[in-house]
Length: 367
Image 1: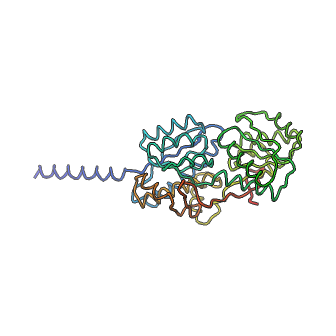
Image 2: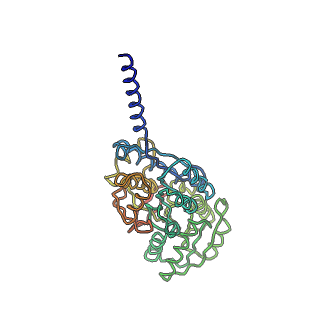
Image 3: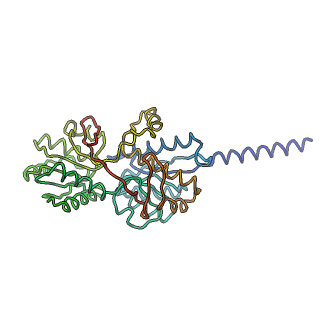
């Protein structure tokens, strides 16, 4: 009788440990982006949006009964660090990723992901990322070709400038979007008087501002991130230079207004839609606000949609990234951004940017 009791106890213990192992098994989703560095504010949007989406899915029972586990990686928007992050992801056994954010980080990191069969959904906009024919790389945002065309069309139809300058920060993202704007303006018959790069991280832009002022520039498009543009705006006002400024989604950040102050009032920015205003997203909005987080940022929702997309296709096809990638390519999913459809390159079909007027309080109004 005692032997049977011991055997029964052992069997129950084994069953308990087995069930705990099953319950503990999670689906790992990595988040790779800038947690440090000058554009960490965009990383905040990315990480917070990803965590909010994961929390909502886990609250509803996970994916086919498995909870999602988030693993965070800081690339500091630096290409070399991004490659190190990619290799760390491989070692950690991560097969699904939200990231990277900066195009200059996404480009080299995705070389690793493609070789290792890691499915990455990025909100980087540089077209070159998906022009390589990779199997495992997708986006939840439009391309710089779309954004550049939107900006150029607005400039032609609404601003009608006499003298245009296009500046950039000499980095993959900034120079890429600046080149797209330049090409789109030329196609519309608008001559660009100055196309020039500045150095990311610089603090004094008086030299280029003086040049722009002397050339009677009345519209300045800036391709790059908010820290440099914030300083350019502030220093331009100090030097009495007041053209119309315009930039891409990477300048649409409250921190820009912290840097530029009232000089940021009236800046034009191309941005995705305000998905935080949609009724379908109010549960996630409420969750983020309960965490003292801002749900308005554009990269919040590209990240939410990335998680929701992967969850949908994993639920349908299992945790094999190859099967998920095959289903996504040419497939569609309902997300916080509405229905998303991907082409054979992994780019979204029909994504549209809007034009927003930026305000000194760090908010934008679509126009």
